[in-house]
Length: 133
Image 1 (cartoon, rainbow, N blue to C red):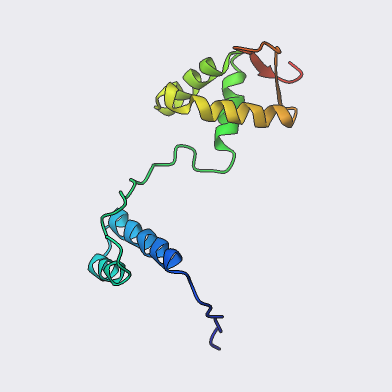
Image 2 (cartoon, rainbow, N blue to C red):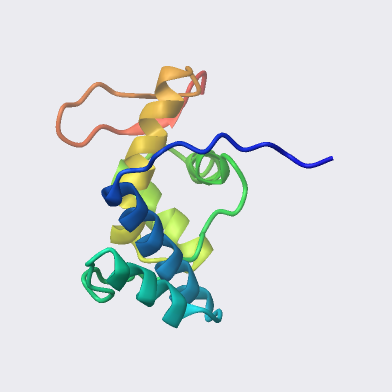
């Protein structure tokens, strides 16, 4: 059985975005076919090198909720500020603390809304701890 695809008209901008996306995938993964994608881009009067292809960023926490679990594990060592929690996570996961600090802050606020952690209510540098401890 063959699948039926509803073909609708795409704008040239959409086609260009798709081609740039495919070009980035080819470059990052080292695949063949870059010359074909470049030819299609030129067909649409677009410059193949107009956009920088971003590098693949390695995933630090491979599973869903991995950072939240790391935050909870860091808080089991005692209450701490978000910078201290980021430093604890950075030490155990071979990372830079400044690189992970903002993500830790977002994870802490998500855990706070679920009632897992709480802070002391300080405005500037709140001290976080596990709820009920």
